[in-house]
Length: 148
Image 1 (cartoon, rainbow, N blue to C red):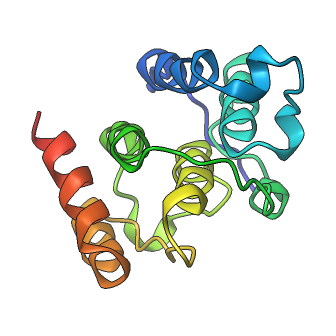
Image 2: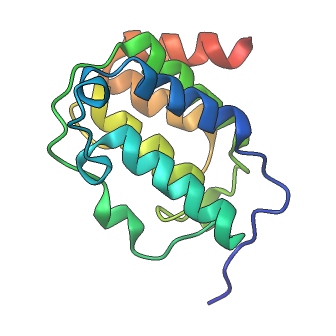
């Protein structure tokens, strides 16, 4: 199995958006931040690892997404960050991997605002249709941010 390289993907904007979540987090300001149990912390770790190793796929990482992060997140901020991850998506359709770095970030953020994980179809348009089945509001927010 070959590992995709991240030489043509710039994660800088996405990382800045994730860092902004941390700047406004009460847990961080109280000195109680645990990145390993935080959805945003996980996403940041994934991006850092991908940048450091020069890869776009981290085999098995989708099983490591925190499931018990119950912090409140603003849906508009999450949807804006999901939209940014969608802008980086290569629309790989049938070749989509749930362990793709872009997918890992998007999926971890979904956990903050959706009841069920979306089975990503490898296409942003089809993804929005699936999100809309769970939350028309979130789907509309993501679509709005994609148009900007």
